[in-house]
Length: 146
Ligand SMILES: [Zn+2]
Image (tube, rainbow, N blue to C red):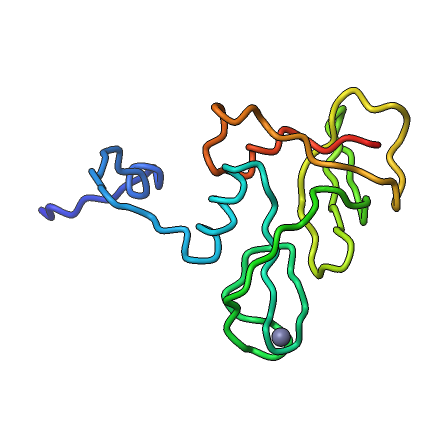
């Protein structure tokens, strides 16, 4: 007589219900921290390469063009234009291109929309009230046409 046991239901082997207590801190990094701090002040920060002078509208530690470390920061006026967009139900997600910068910021449009969005339309960021900001991208409530 054998004592061999075989699972007949594969889920019994693959599923182990329990929990693993993990405690950790996640650092968003130097560049994102600067971007986050600016958001908390109701500002958009650009990351300027001191070598090629390109300004990126997204947090970067190194210039993707010349690979130099970025240590210069400039405030970007929170007004740009719709570079691209997508619609999901009533939600409209846009890529905003700011003048004289590289890269885009992805965010949502204010609802309800007055008509269908168009590429090239001028939009501006609407920030939360100062006391409600946390340094998160959601400190920008939405972008609105102007
Ligand atoms: Zn550069």
